[in-house]
Length: 153
Picture 1 (cartoon, rainbow, N blue to C red):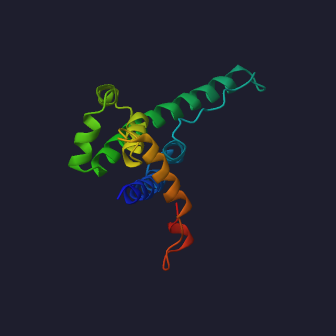
Picture 2: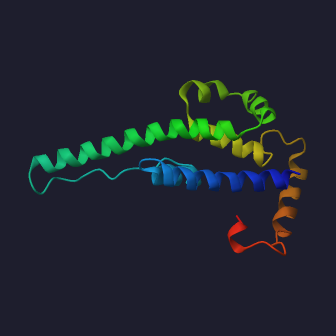
Picture 3: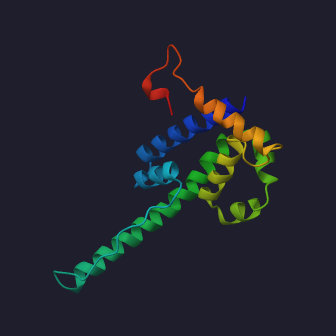
């Protein structure tokens, strides 16, 4: 059962990353953030070559991209929260630190909490058994008869 939860989480995360990447302004940055689980950094300009105005315009463009990324990440929060079941809502709301995630609308921290829950890392009853089970799933991972290469995470 845990294996199916983790597989469903991976598949859903990839689908959401593709959707956001295609349908939102500068969505590729959000898709990259979703898949890498870290916010991308924009390169800061060096000394302007064509005068001071070129550097200011470049910095304004970076600030605009960062603002768009921040707005898209807040939208991403509502998308992933809407994909969760009521049971998962209750489990995640019970985790310490959820109040911060909810108050700050931090979609990256919510994704980390969902990852931990999906891979059953929040409360393993027996850590040794959990580790052994994860190894077993890893070593017995194989492609099903009618699945394509694309469906394998």
